[in-house]
Image 1 (cartoon, rainbow over the protein chains, first blue to last red):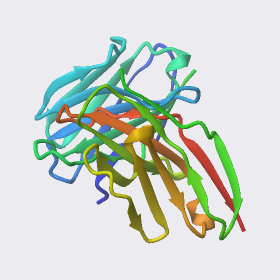
Image 2 (image 1 turned 30 degrees about the vertical axis):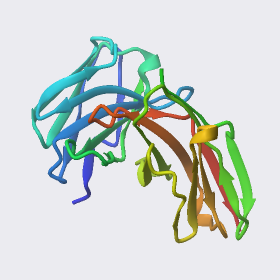
Image 3 (image 1 turned 180 degrees about the vertical axis):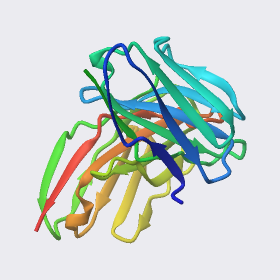
Length: 114
Length: 115
């Protein structure tokens, strides 16, 4: 098992659909993140979860709804998306509390909204 | 506000050439962390190095080396004797001392190494 696994790898959805992205980390970390990578913009942080509690929500539209049922799993529920939401969505995890640490990323879900 | 600038959008080199990727950052924090990540075509971000703001020692790891200079707010990355497998997008990133990986990324530098 790789450290951080994301499914699906590719997703095409219509603007009226509801879908979910899944992330699972096998590293025993206590924090998980969603980042968005658009074609024309830098990678940007969307959400941060620590021990299943959301600690950061970077002004993300409500059509993106995260869920963290336990410290190993993170979901991003999508509904009524817009074409400009097409992007690579990257999940990451880290072990926080000890100072020097880094985030480990999954391979991402390439989302296309049509 | 924090900001990371990678002015080089794309660099093309021939195998065995040395190449330096530039990174300039802005922050008001006294304690912060700098990172480099590699993104191959498969998509995942691969961690390369972390530096904290109190450690200005340069680091070498195989063909990779990093030059951190607080005086110029720069954290440059050099690949010596580049190889085709080094072709990827490289991101420099910055985080504060918040206890979480709230990374602010640069726009990335695409490195193309041709045989």
